Length: 244
Image (cartoon, rainbow, N blue to C red; front, side, top):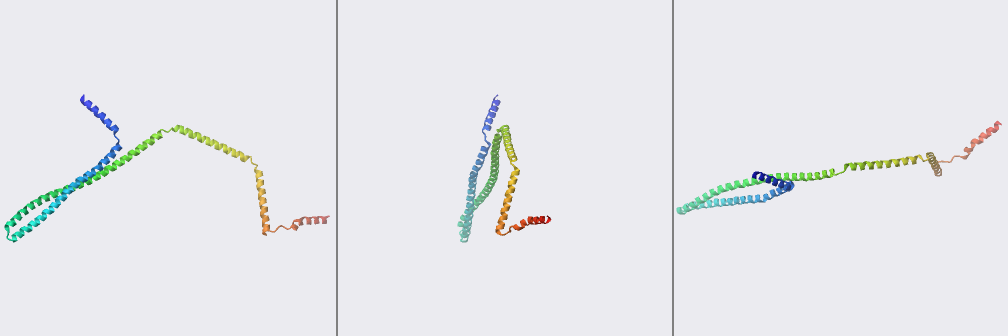
């Protein structure tokens, strides 16, 4: 009975958590968490680097002390002070032992620093990859939300009603255009085309006479002689008299 109750409770809490989870918000929080880890990692690397720097300085000091003590041992021997040379030699051995320990620690510190830097590079690559994946997923989620809204809006359209109204309006426009076209045809048929043609010919003749008159005034054309116009009938009359 108890295992069934625990399983039921886990399923209930699992459903509750999954119902309140927003993948987009969780991905954004993951990006912030990754960015927050960078300063902490830099701080840890800075501590490793500080330890390495300290060991390097100690190493340089030990080497300098060894050179000084070596010079002092040689100087004491040359001065015949073997007792003083022995004291310097004892210190020299101590410094050499410290230098050996320091060099081992220095080598370990260098390896630790290199590993820390490699770890940071790997972390930064992974962070950039996950950040890019999260940003792409967020863009896809927002695009999907927009598409869902568009789909809901399109599904809510009353397509049948719109089509019926559309067809009805088209039919009314076509009927109105047909009526106007018929009225225009009837108006054109009621016009006396012959009278219109006569008026157009008369206007054209008047225009030609006006052009001819203007040419005569400009001296571009001479008027027809009057004698030639009446000569024909006079000769005809004379001929008729002779026949009688």
